Length: 198
Image 1 (cartoon, rainbow, N blue to C red):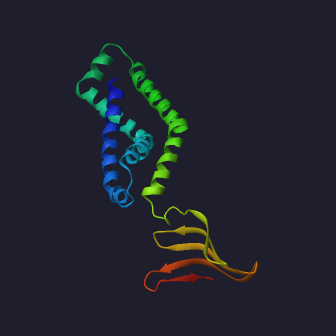
Image 2 (image 1 turned 60 degrees about the horizontal axis):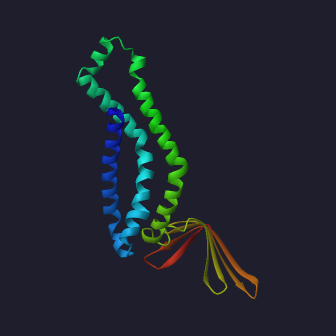
Image 3 (image 1 turned 90 degrees about the vertical axis):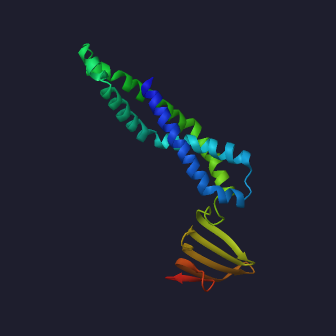
């Protein structure tokens, strides 16, 4: 009971801090994109908590074992247990039982709860948090103007670079021109794209 109590208290404490930091970081996005409070709470943070709780749980099991055992040693409980003739193996039973219970909970979260929670959380992020280009991902296809098509294997929003870039012009169902480049970087000063190894 003490072991599990310490673990859940520490994980609730760190999750509270994580939620506050995340809210502070994303508050501007929520206001800018007019995210409803109900969706912020139920679609985002209700699904944010299980994911990060499960991610941090191995670290907090380690911290719990250290804190719990050092508290027992400070209160001379370990000496009293060993003096009563209880072996180290028997003393490890609560640790093993608690670790097995937490592992089972983690497995249930990983298999059944987190995949669905992540789907809802990531949809919310795409809608209210990330910019249009941050969520483009891989294999980008755009029609920039009638008859002009742009392809990129991937796009990096932080340096405004498209990799494995190709631009094609099609007129009357025929390919008129095609330019391929290893990368295309957008120059914010000139407002133009710079192709490398084209």
